[in-house]
Length: 398
Image 1 (cartoon, rainbow, N blue to C red):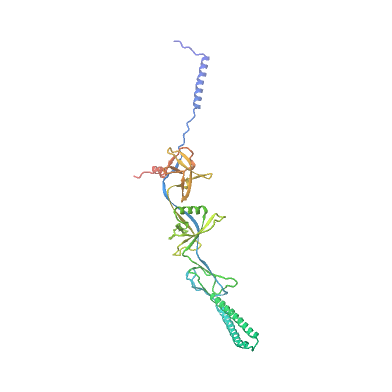
Image 2: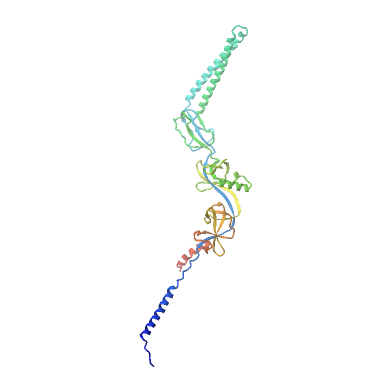
């Protein structure tokens, strides 16, 4: 059998065709795009909406004060002789607090009594002159002018007695001011003067201050919005806002044992602050509360049934409107406008736009997009998912 030997032309053609096939194969391989993996839906925390009975309240921040803060001042000038009271203790009405030096006032009283005696003696003489001259004038034994002068002297004498008597009473009053007594029952503060100090010279010197502690007053400011809300809630319940129960919280967070009530609401809103000044009264039998303390007062606005409330952090505010991210049964997110109501702690009441049985996003709001799928999990499921890897990686005990 004879074999034909390929010519050079045929060998070149074969090599060229083989190269084309190789280049074509490489080109097809280069045109094929790699597949990109789709990221999983973002994990978000959701809660199921249920209705509940919500207790509504409002919180006021303010300061305590006494119904009576009486400043004890010196009414006369004198040196302090005694201060027979214990600073910081409770004093009764009428207790002696300070004694001033009485000697100058006793001297003035003696002089005033002497002047009164002289005035009375002069009046007695004038009256006797009238008694003596009256029958003589009737018999025309003396000029009528003598009798008229005697009668005028009686009037002057009576006026002198009145003046002298007033000086005596004024001196007695000043003498009485030397003994400074407690005008009310209450807690007295520190003495503002020392024994031997001159007080009352030119001005009524402050000696001490007494405050009544039971009851105690709370002063605070409420916004006009909160005031209208409280008025509306109280009218819905058929009662006056002044009858709303009040709970006082001490600065250390402890609740006061007795409830209080509003005793004063100012007539107008302060234009500068937009608030209304209110005053509440609380029993203070143990004298634990003192003027100047800061405190919080919780106003009980009653309860509202079938309320839908959500965590405040779940509400998105945009251009003055409020929205929530709702999770559909297909596990996709959709944004829905809602109408919000009062705050209840860290939650907010939803008045419209949400109903029981729906799910909302409370964590991971920045991950969701309109209509995009999500991996919705409750807080319990998230905790279990985070603890699962740790439990799996922990070696078993034998």
